[in-house]
Image (tube, rainbow, N blue to C red; front, side):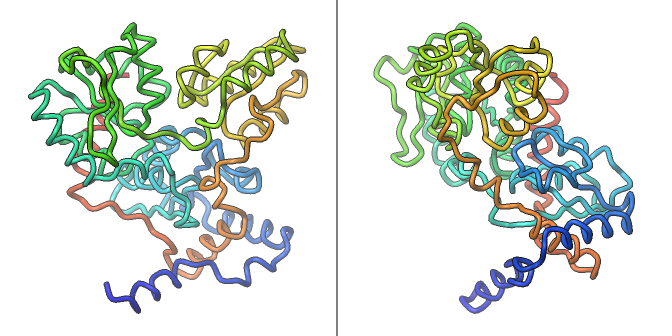
Length: 369
């Protein structure tokens, strides 16, 4: 693509400045009008980490896979305006029918973790790991990954996992091969393997930047190979945060997401998926105290929805996920007004050859959970 073409393409993807000057009341009214006009032909999934100004217009809320599955089940919707990040919209496009169109209101809404494993790095890693370990490795990828990585995993006999089913999927994977390559989040892989009784000494790290295996012992002892990736939000919850809570609020429960480091998960009272965290807090006794280690938009929503409990963020200085926060009310309205004009702003289209292999990885997971 020539430079002028690239600039023109980027210009088309940018929301017009006029949306930034419109009042909240006007924008909310317009969203409601467009939703009413489209009726069942329009479907708006909203991820738990999205801003309240977007969530209030969502037809369904959930984690990334729940939302993609909900979109796939909804056969009436002609347009799916996905309020999440790029990899989620990709998954929705792969799981929905050919006639359904998936739109991402802001193309800058990405995921730093998903970006830590690209297909070129993964192909290079796989070639070296095959030389080192032979045909003894099964790849698994967190759903927080690109369509290309899902396709790589599907093509090589592996499956996707979520934070809810990672334990079950690792158990399945070990019935297939002796070793696991876990992409792209090292912390979820490490925490899950540890919970299954695999010692840390049998886990190695693959560094995609240096293109090397990081391991001190005999490589024949390696059982789990962890891709050196992480969630930029969850990695900011620290042992110091936990020590502070234990000192100042000794009767407070600490619950964290397994994308946090092994040290943080090990010192917490509970660890589990977003769904697990929400359900644990909802079922907790009135008056109970909780420090939550997960994304700030969700923590604030949990606080609002549970006024009978004392709830704080495990890290009081935590900011919301920057890329999750890209989608706001103006971008949502821009996408919807585009549909109203017959324009598909920021449509997400995954090539058929990638979809075929990626769906294999998704289907293997769904068949085992």
